[in-house]
Length: 259
Image (spheres, rainbow, N blue to C red):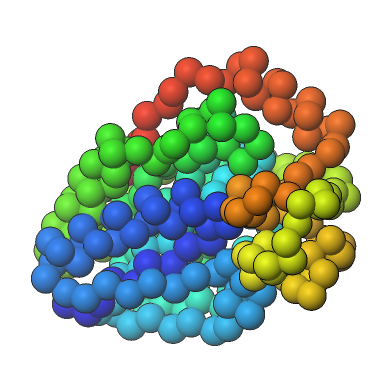
């Protein structure tokens, strides 16, 4: 057996948490090492990654509008496998994961991987803690470990049957998106944490009040600011939050796909 490599794009940590639990359980069950690779920063996403036939890749990312994040499309072409087993995770904010899991499986398959297992997990929604606040919780992580055990068993048996997951062709059309920027309160201390966490690298580390173009509205800066100085003031986001809270608060359960 080779090693387990856990790769995630996870601005606010939910996708990473689920992925690490799956990856650590696979490594524990298979008796091998586990390592972590982040796609959170532009330099990480621009790098080239190669995995051999004895390795196993766990790839996780959040769901944006029923799809994988658009900024990962090019990054996926930087991953190269050699008939490498993989586990794909789509992590969503309790609304729906739609075509994201299928997209992840198919994009990895094109790059020389064989996705043998997959999972749709729930994490606190980017816009509001009223949806899946505090998740993934211990019950979610228990299911992540269960997926890890099943994936490890399939890996150890040399079973490289492609996993079947829900989704549609063509994939759901992406929304046009909107130009948004986080704002900054006077309470900002200039610590620069938001700049270091911004996945687009558009917050000025010397003056965090200065934000360039290309914001994802991932809320990494908002949720991690130690003094609560970052915030969004946007009518579109406010409407989306109200709609989500009105329709999607009923907790959803992770779905596991192995056979």
